[in-house]
Length: 165
Image (tube, rainbow, N blue to C red; front, side, top):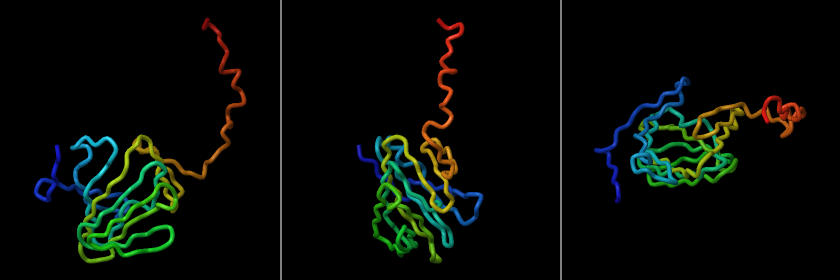
């Protein structure tokens, strides 16, 4: 069955980070309401002078923004672009798909944020060197890369059977 979302039947809540510049209004989880298996989508509104999420890219999720009203500046790895009502932007998997929005105007910018959901995803934040294991929200500094076998040198000690027979 088709489900239609309108301004009249959607509610929005303010998402405010501890850093005042990161703030947006988001609809209730529309993809959860329709029980979507492979898409995550919400309507978001970015107030003037505010940034969307920190600059990031995904390792296992494609993303699309559709600008419904207003304008915003899009940051990508290669340039800054002004987005306008009706624009559709696709973000590919990997560093080439890194993105962030900033509302440089005096009016809100409303957009649909659509992403694929195929299980675990790793979101990376190039500005701060963090990684985020989604959907668990486990966030780590990425500068702690270690060798695959680090700490595995005493494997035989872990195989002592003792009382187990």
